[in-house]
Image 1 (cartoon, rainbow, N blue to C red):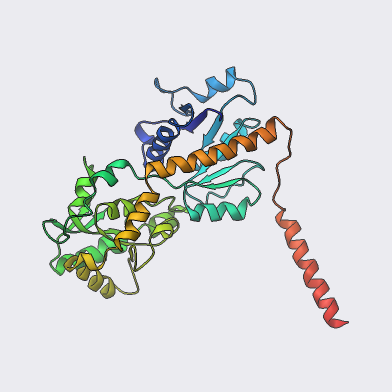
Image 2 (cartoon, rainbow, N blue to C red; image 1 turned 60 degrees about the vertical axis):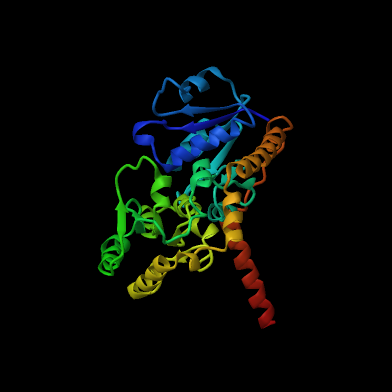
Amino acid sequence: MRPIRFLLPGTTGRFRCGGLLVELQTARLTAQLVPTEVVTYRQREADHPFLDDLLARESTPGKTLWIVSWGFDVPGQLRRLRGRPVAYHAHSSGYGFSLPPGVPVLAVSRNTLGYWGDRAPRNPLFLVPNALQPKWLERGNRAAPLGCGRPIDVLVQQRKSSRYVLQHLVPALRRRGLRVEVQSGWVDDLVDLFNSAAVVLYDSADYWRGRGVSEGFGLPPLEALACGCVVFSSLNHALADSLDPGVVGHQIGCGTLENDLERIQAAVADPQAWLPPPARLSSLLEACSEPVLQERWHTALEAIDAHWSHLLLEGATPLRSSPLLALRIDQWRRRFWTMWRSLN
């Protein structure tokens, strides 16, 4: 298979975020399959090559597969890489751009897969969810008896959390005597923090709606489940991939504040009754493990390599999606003939 280059704006400072950490983790996984390197395009860094330098000295099409992922930058990156093997590692959906024919999509969730299955149905599509870091599976305290020795009744991470949770639900839970911690600053060991909580609340629907894009992969609820926590979460976008409400997790903001208070208080009192069935949780976490996801990447990369060989070496023509106008005309034509036949 072709060597891989993950294209990122930078790896330090203002570029540090969940999406960056996931790309770096994925690069580490694929490096065990094929030669892999990280390339930056905004910030020059001593440890990584810079896009401008590589394009200046390497002729098209080149020998590597480029992986682009950075949201609104993707259309510009695809233009710069035209004629070279490239694939889009799609985290969030909703950015509004279209993909050129033939560009494969590596979707991190079924929500994102469905989005591109609608917008680019003739492009090669793959599902490669993001992996949990091994520390969550190795150190997550799923076996300890819940409700005994966990100092936090309810844990909330302030970032991405809704006004409803922070301004209404949290104060109401505290008035009922529950020990609620709102984590806002830097935490050296998140596994330790989640292991200390009986219930975790995650409500990102408002956060992502305000930004106009989707929850790309929703790892925090999975991390909480890996630590034996009961999870109350919104079900927007990728969160619906894994959080079967009432089975694996529980909907937050479910109808009324009183309903939330009663269910969360009951979960704190008897967490075991609110946790997912052990076999279901074990299957879910295994599906998110690095070995399983590495195998998914191997399968996808083999198919993408063959796809680009068809295009670049054999001169095949990529399939194109039908233009929206043509689809509308077909629909109007069918309606016209249906009406004409009913009148005659």
